[in-house]
Length: 437
Image (cartoon, rainbow, N blue to C red; front, side):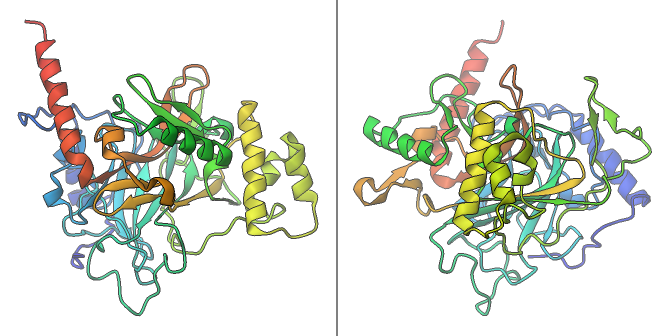
């Protein structure tokens, strides 16, 4: 339940807040060691050099934030699923709030570090739950909906309100809105799946082949590396999202006096902005639609100087259909990605919105991929060997291929848990036997 007695946003100079911040810094400096044979806990990563002001005790990570495994499914508020920031990753949750509010609240059973609330699609206007987060390169807000799950609390939904999923095939939607801290090349930013250990048993070869053929028809620049210790399936961010909008502001986000006027030097001669004053979006529930090519919120004008198709689309006076607008953007940015284009870049004075949705994932009794009547539902737990699905985007270093996450959240289903627990136990046994005597 929502704790309506929570004071919400506290002044930055409040002594109580200063005390909490000092305590959290002390906690983050500890090395967490687990004696639980089934769950691995590592030393917490160093936080980003600048964090947005965190105004509520609920926004701080708990000790379980750094466990590789979440708590057992019996403790998940929205069982059979749970969402959490990827452990030991770059994504720091600032707080959880209602979509129509600016103050962070306590939600019973949830934690900003180990268990984040999901929406059902049936929330009343302004009552959806959103997550403000920050990473090294991005700061923004996440809204995620999954069809058919339990509501995060009894105060969010009501029979009088239409469900977002009504009349739609899709079973999942996620919207991210926020700002970049560095002017990253758009074609160096990716989304998809990246695993920390080898995958498990794959379906029959013809099923895998059919799926990859279908997927690459939709995203020609998809890169798949199934073998090895760190399997990946990556696609271009701008060419993959179903909807992309760019809302330019009149002024660039200001920095605090701790930064130079040009931003903070990260040691590589680059400057970082937007650390301190992006308050998060309060219109995350608004319907989204791909803008017309000539609209100021479209990404096609950004690409027009670098791609003739984009230039033609921007100059065309005739309005086009939604599907046509999406197809044109995807075609243009797939081509730019193939050429490893250094431009266009994400701007620092612009708020970007990325919407993703799909109808293939099933979150019922087991996490599965709906392959249609011919194949049926393919369980994913054996395929990932119990590893969760990621909702992520990252900047990929062009020289090394290393991923620096813009955001990364793990979507767990209880059908993954036993395999994940077994794999974690095996990892711990291996690390023990390999430890020097």
